[in-house]
Image (tube, rainbow, N blue to C red; front, side):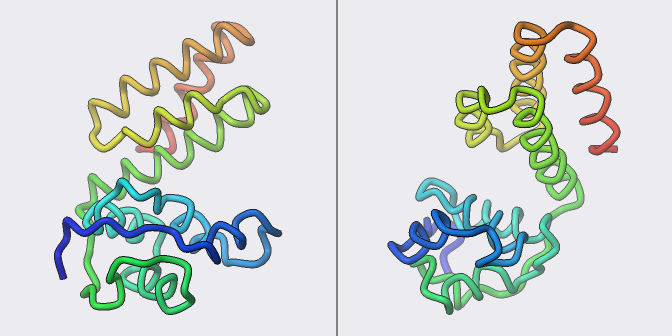
Length: 153
């Protein structure tokens, strides 16, 4: 299967995501949310591995009719440890920034979609911390950085 193939959500997936969170297991839901029509299979496999789904997530989503793009033929892959740590830290930071900014985080969420390397992650963290400092204070921004660093470690 071509690792450059870009899967997309189906109408059924969009409907499911608009409904109750309980309709899909948390890891599969996060993976489905990550399928945005821009990420390649290779990138999504790294996310799948970081979420602990090891070669089952994309196949399950396609079997359930939630994504289109040939994921069923994918071999199980293992993402490099550095990529797994980056994805986990990014997911943790997204959750934390959402809590700290109480719904005023859409721009940062949009920017997080472009985070695909450690250097971009660090720049994105700077933006998050600056936004948190502006909305709250520098102490809260520092706490954000410390918690994300601890989670990434």
